[in-house]
Image (tube, rainbow, N blue to C red; front, side):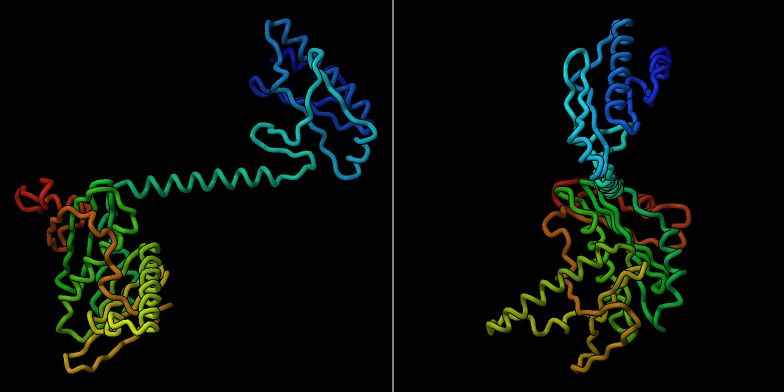
Length: 356
């Protein structure tokens, strides 16, 4: 392509870019007739050079465009530019792509920005899909870092559980760390009938932690806190609670006896908090059985009541479950899934369809 560049350089008032098999020509002369003659001369030179080496320029892929403002458009109406290639007239285009950059006839870059935004959204969506299907839980060191960062913000005497989860098309692994309860780490493996969203795995981990710390703190007056790194899980809990509150309000207005008026007394006081501070969900704690109740309200961004029915993420998708209770001190160099496999009981049936 170097000889073609020399031939184009010999033509005055024409600039060019040659990249692989892509040739771009342009002219910025003030005289529109001179622009037309210079570009036509460059087209003829390129066509002649290609024929000499046995190639032919494609008239279907060869486009031209006049970039001008409103005043320049009025000039083009009086002096239009017409170009031909091999005797065939070329069709003017409203926009052109030059080395990946979209240029429109009015000189605006809006079309290029829209295309870049669309490509960026597609790449981010692909990253989210790949990361949710990775199937490898985050290491226990992540829990320890979260524990250290959150210690200063915890109410005195609180029992805290840190949750994490990962999922594939066939299984979900949940990990729960309770440093205030004998440094306990619980890993659970769930077999699935089909794939579930990653937020369902996070909600499943929160449900497991809820059951675990509710039993551990049943005789304690301390506040129970469940922490998760998943913003989506917190948003899902809020959405489920809003939906449930709306249904209860509709039932109350219709005087429906099935309205859940006593929902605040069916679970212990549990606070669901995002590790990054994205919000929380608070529930009042039932007292010693005498009917009185007390609430210790920590400094949080939001609070609301939640019951176990809000934490049913996968429904009938579960086939079975196997769990291992592991001290946190045994997990310094292993991920929760690896530790769970290392401490699993002998191989046996899980549920009724699979063998682990």
